[in-house]
Structure formats: C-alpha cells, structure tokens
Image (cartoon, rainbow over all chains, first blue to last red; front, side, top):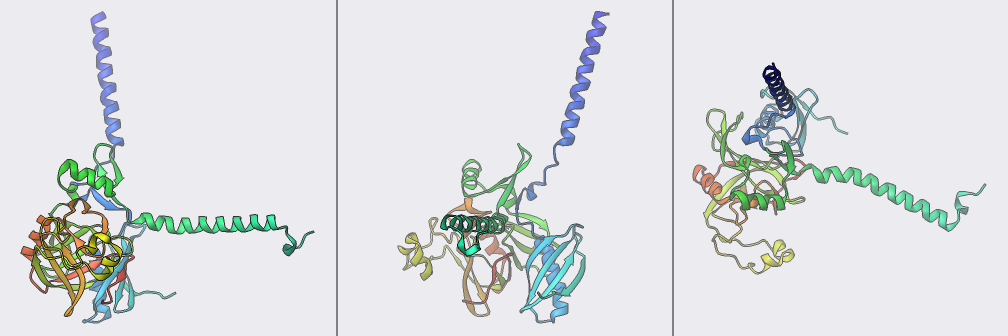
Length: 110
Length: 232
C-alpha cells in the first residue's frame, strides 16, 4: 500500500511538472522566423508593399511620373498607409498584407 | 493685489525657469521619440525579447560569430513587385537591399546606411562599377574628419579601404550623385545607421551583387524621414 501511495505521488508530481511546462510554453511568445529576427523601432511598411502603392499611383499621376514612397505606417486594421511623392504631387495609398492596393488618392493638404 | 509687472525679481526668475523647464520637457517629448525611432533591434532567442542592436552590441556579436545576425545575411525572400528583375531596392529604414528576381522573389542583403542627417531617398541608377576601388573622400568629409583628411589625394583599394571590394557608383541621368553602394572594412556595421549617405555591404555580398547586375540598373532608395535626392 505504501508503495502504491509513493507511486501515486510520483505520478502526481510528474503531471504537475508537465502541466507547468505546458503553461510556461503557452506563455512564451513564438519566436520570429530567422530571417525576421531583425527590425527597427520605426515600423514602416514592407518595401514591396510600398512599391506596389507607388506603382498604382503612377497610373494616376501619369505614365512618366517618378513615384517614390516617402513614409509609411501600419493602420489599426493591419493594413499599411503609404505616403507618395510624384514629382512634388503628394498621394496617399492604403495597401494590405496580401499586396492588394485598397486605395490611392491625392493627399489632403494642410 | 500685486500687478504682474510688479512681481519681485526672484518670483519673475522662478516663473521664467518654470517656463523654460516646461518648454524643455515638451521638446524632449517631441524630439525624444523621434531620435529613438530608428533603433535597430534583434531578437534574442535566449530571453525571447527584442534587444537594441547598437555599435557596441554589433561589434560584440561580430567578434563572437564572425558574421552579422542571420536576418542581415544574404537570402532569397518573397518580394511582390512590378519592378523588373535586376532592379535594386534599398529599404534604408529596415537595413535591407533587395535585388529583384523573377517569380516574385528577391535576393535580400543586409546593409549599413546613412546616420541621422545623412540619409536620403530617390530613384537613381548604377552608372559604373569598380573592383577594389580607390577612395577619395569628398571635400566636406576632409574638412570635418581628420582620418579622411590624410587620404585627401585618394586611398588605394584594399581590405582597409572603406569602399571595400566593389563600388557601384549611383548616377541620376549622367550626373554622379556622389553616393555609392560599396563594400566595407567594418563588417560589423551592417544593420546600423553609420555612413555619410553611402550604402555599405559586407565584401562578399557586394561582390555577389556586382556579379548579378548590369550597368544602368535602376536603384530605388526608400528612407522615411530623409530628404529626397535633388542632385549635387
């Protein structure tokens, strides 16, 4: 009987340890992929998404317009806003993570 | 009741000091976050946290590993763009240079870029390339940097030369912008804002990039908060 009690306690401890480990694992954030293990605190849109916006704005600004992204930021819904300069004309663009350009509009002045 | 103009000198001085302090705090709130915005961070797998990656940390990392952190090493990544293969895209904020490849991919390399006040953005092209180029510091660098001054007449190419193994000379039209994409004698600076406006890569990476591109390749430089290139 004493042996059975000791065995029960050991199994109980093992279960507790496993539960703790599982809980600890759940609390540890998933690390980023190795290629994503660097960033800057300035959270700009990925370069390819910025350029997709620039390409869309070129259609609005004119075929020979040099369109350059000048600033970008993530919006609360997860999409990115990109500010564009087309030879002095300013445009605002919204692009999502799938690379779909949601909108391109002349920027509001002031 | 005492009129405002009749306040004793001590009270006036105290009021001025308070106003100055408030102004400085306000300036600190506005300027502080701006100055901290561009801090590079790398993920520490041991502590599961993002840690600041500055010059000191970068030197230590390089001394331990003899290479930059994995994210700054050459690798192929997904890159959705309408730009043709062979186009170079520089994300100065995130310290990556992309060479567009067919099939929605790009080769990504880590870079070092211009420190605060020396960054720029624009659309230029590769005007020419050189192997182990001579470095001639521009006049303004000679004026402000004694180390550069001794090479005012030109530093021959070699491992100590700051241009490293290759230099891609960036032009706008037929005009040399004075900016280059080049190798480096300080490979631990990849991932940092350190240069005077040039884009630096480690020597193996710039050699690889130079072997893959053609003279005339389009170069798009993205850098939030930097001045747009308007010519020299």
